[in-house]
Amino acid sequence: MGVGADLMDGLVVVGCSRRKTVTSRPVPALELYQGGCVPRLRDRLGADAGRRRQVLVLSARHGLVPADAPLETYDQPLTERRARVLCQPVRHALTVHLAIHPTREALLLLEPAYLQVLGTPPVPVVHVITDPVAHFGAAEKILATWGWA
Image (tube, rainbow, N blue to C red):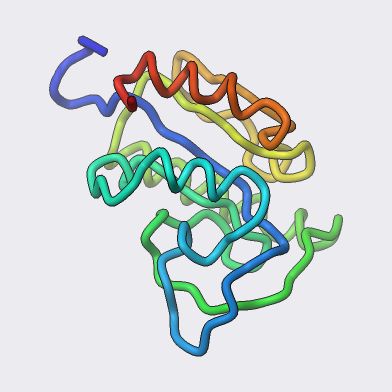
């Protein structure tokens, strides 16, 4: 990206999914979710720890969590009430993350209800894909500009 060593080359925020791995022990968030665009994003990232640190998952139960945060199977839909409860802690978590890991670009792979919870990240360039399953090809093009081949 050529913006300096102190800036990451992008942040991805992806929404959780209803389909999850059934497990009796915690697994990394990115491994837990089996629906939506998460499997395609996970395949794209592979085991690259550096890039996985640049991915946050917006969970209806846990809020905004790192891709490798250990989570157990759960069932928690994002209701309007739950969305209101999550707004402040999610936005605070994003602010903290960006203070530690500044970036110039963010790619939001979030359906509209999740996008409302997150709000707009305070970064210069924000890419929003509100139907990440149907338009994951557009996400791949953005990731390619970041060097996430």
